[in-house]
Length: 264
Ligand code: IPD
Ligand code: CA
Ligand code: CA
Image 1 (spheres, helix red, strand yellow):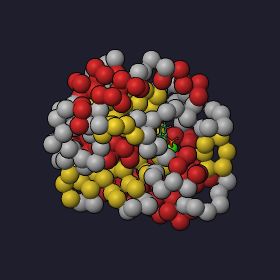
Image 2 (cartoon, helix red, strand yellow; image 1 turned 45 degrees about the vertical axis):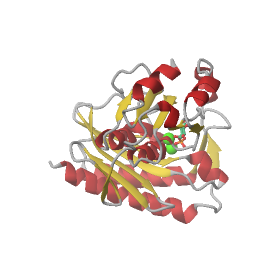
Image 3 (cartoon, helix red, strand yellow; image 1 turned 90 degrees about the horizontal axis):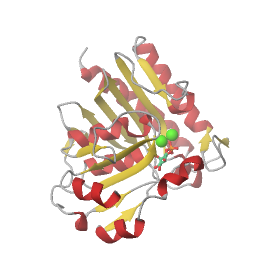
């Protein structure tokens, strides 16, 4: 089947889930937590995920669907043999709960372990980022590229994030934030890894790293960056593997080696 069918389905479901998020943003909703009080989840995360996973399973019953709020892979998360969908129904839940308008829906598809379709939708700005393997990245239907003007880390606006699961907070201790901030233009932490990757794909940010993300956080966004001319690896410079508590570095490509060095 053509990837276009998969892309169209992912776009429709991301926009429908985005409608739910937009209509509930700033209102009242049930909230709870997962691994600890900082690892938030709301009824909106669950509603959005149910809508997306039900839609994908109805249309593509043979595909594997991995969704954050119904993750039953218990340590696995390896892609299925054939098609595997990675769904983060609301990336940026902490922002959503605190009323900060920076969150998105993220849906990625891999085939035999290779990412083929990526959709990141920001419902509050109605910005739709889409990518198909070999066909580039678009923002609201128009082709976008990574920032090709900033060739050195000293010019780069970087972004990172911190784990909601505090059991993994120790992974931040090996990083020299003072050195990293001194070596780039500046460093942000915007609170939605998928949307941050989308921002790299259209040149708003230059590079990102994080070392405690999950497959659903990065599947779609990493394809957006790669298809927009950027580079995506793990923190050791190896190809990204979609698994639990992965590390990622993604950039416009030019600054990538310098970024990896500054993190080592
Ligand atoms: C989180 C966001 C955040 C990242 C966290 C993720 P969630 O996802 O992507 O930017 O720093 O590690 O857990 O919980 O909002 O879906
Ligand atoms: Ca997430
Ligand atoms: Ca989420």
